[in-house]
Length: 306
Image 1 (cartoon, rainbow, N blue to C red):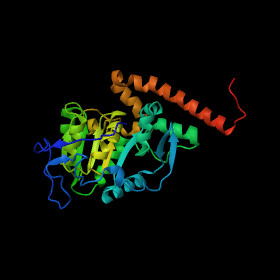
Image 2: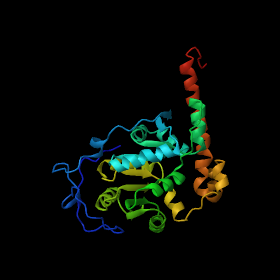
Image 3: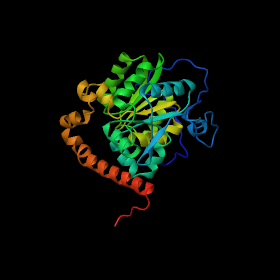
Image 4: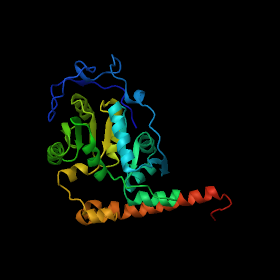
């Protein structure tokens, strides 16, 4: 990933769609939203503030370290890090993201600096096939994200980035009415440059950022701009804003319970999702077989392919 070596965001007044922040005695970035590295830097970059990630087991799938956590443990870990102000980037590893990471070393390296949670039946199959057991629970982002929002401290400032303008605007109102949060601001994923969005997030004094650009774009944005965003927690949420705004319907609970939501989504959006859920799934299973066979060869070096 390309690191930002120098950036300065001029103070152009209040950010559109931004809620005023409460008074605070924390250090202010006088006259700028972000500070030129050649000048005074009142806030250290996130990489300088990163503490120990915490104690949890991971399983490597296609070079990505996926956390082995139950739902309550994952929620408690994130809430504790938010309370302490520890920088935490979160992504959900589904089969699609793992396939992107398998072919992209920079993406793999970026993901391995984040808290990666398992998402979907495909990742469970991979864990069982490679490591001998599935993950303890399915922590898909569309269910996990609202659970996290419901447990945030009252008044937590949340910024929404991504989706269509009409979607994120409605999602902002819905989330603020449903959860104990303040939507500090929002930006759609199409009308503004990513650097400007990072500036807006800092201007809004957000504490949590939901990034809904689709994978792998949302994970790449977090990896590139996370070091200059002052919000402690950044979460790659995929289609969650579309679900929250009721622009895309979720599968009935019983379908989700048997882990077939992907079939429901394919039936609702065949043109957009057919390639991902047909060719993509076959590619994932093929890659999984290759990974499994490599493990067999490594454990039994006397086996040779003709």
